[in-house]
Length: 469
Image (cartoon, rainbow, N blue to C red; front, top):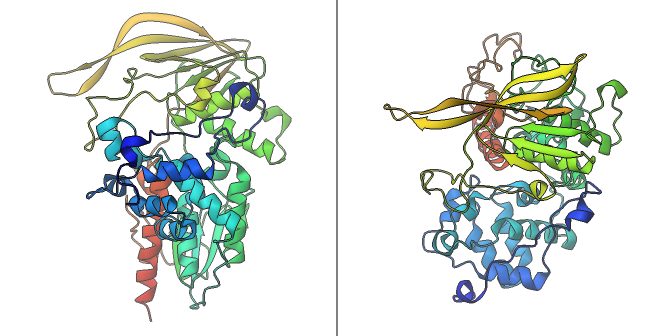
């Protein structure tokens, strides 16, 4: 630890966001960066704790204290080498990870001023690209081939790891471009797509083969192993009265379309979703809903309301979700919320109301949550109903679990000699050479967890193929 007293003398300093009046006029990244001097000072705040909870809380097991010290001492190349050893794509996680490491930082627990771990991470990655620390690896091929189905964070991580071990890796992607959730599900104002493209180009130079526009219904022949990384893409629906009215869309349909438009990918005029001049209601209080808010703001919606069925969480600390046994459920105000949005809690949707097949209003009802004698929390309707005007509704209520809903099984992923491929919640399957990872097995989760699963699955595939003569 270079400065053992920095955490006492230097306060947490975040880079912050671009001004609202500026950023809502484009889809450029909203987050700013600190200068090198300030970034090194922020890194010096890391105490190199005897028991680094940040390392424990990170799904990837990142060695934060090590690379924080290296940043502080100006050893940026060494910092990247340490970071890259655990995280394949720090330029992604440094932008979009909710930073469970910071929630467990000793300075968070003791003074509510955690080290700026996530921002420091992305600064290392960008410095590495700018200074040329990132070199093209040219692995010696071992003669074995692996197919990766899906090019989201889990699939890309598995492909990257396997490629560098010498396997010839082919990634199959059903969409027009590579990236999965990173490309289509996350708005550009949070993750610019040139950042994704930069990494894809590097992987191509290193020998990874990408095949886009390929819907895999049967596992392709000619591969020694398969990695299923198809994500969790089936959104949870809201089958109430009026669901088929025009103007009701799944959140991901909206977000993916906007990302396609920004990539100049043609969108049929009759399917175009635009919030300009409209009253928007987002149903669901999570990050996907927040992304809809930010997108609608940029499309110049006249009013945006976001509703959540659960209680409004407290600010700062929630005694009902104590660390470390639970992830802290506290009020999160995103950059999108700051741009303009009315947020409401304890509301359930009753019915959609329209005229001549077009959405006009949504009836909602206030609910309360009570704990029964068995200790379970139950929702109780209050009978207090109201009408919210809405021209557009975006359903952002999460996704169904691919395994639990039986979406990954032999009917849609099989080979002629393996009719009963069934993937469980880990990366194992009933076929010895078929593995799975990421949201396809866990249900929708964090990008950083998907990357960790991709890394672990690549290790399992390597172990399996190494045992075959």
